[in-house]
Length: 118
Image (cartoon, rainbow, N blue to C red; front, side):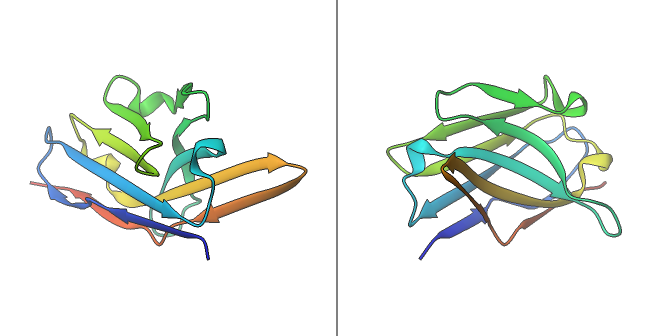
């Protein structure tokens, strides 16, 4: 059974930092592209950052220079370090695992709330 479990969300003041973690089980983690997405009520889920199996990364423009995605293949875990947080970063953050070897396999975590407010 595949599981993606996020943690680390919470309430933080503007300018503060949070570190999200997503621990996986049931997948060959090192082969998967891992991503962090976020969603606010009434809006689509947006891609925030991606880290590939080779360690390459991509970020949406609004978080470049503030967020860092990383992975620890030994722990089957992906992280999102979020610095200089802004109120517009407030959202539910979701972890995603994706692989395309023949058939595509795509999995989601349950989400963790991040609220940036004074």
